Image (cartoon, rainbow, N blue to C red):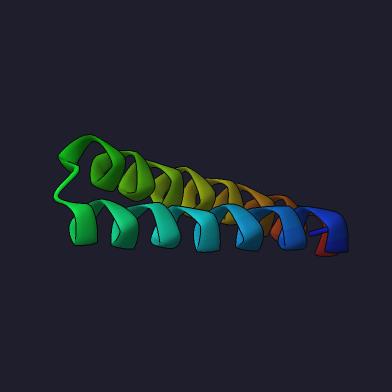
Length: 58
């Protein structure tokens, strides 16, 4: 996994947590759901990068 990809995915995850928290604090369910979605997308990207790395090692 490239360092740039790790940083981007981590930033997306943190941003998603921020959106989720802001949505919860303001009662905005749409923003809260968008934040959760961003986190899931980030997690999937991280998993994909780990799979790529596993195949590169062989």
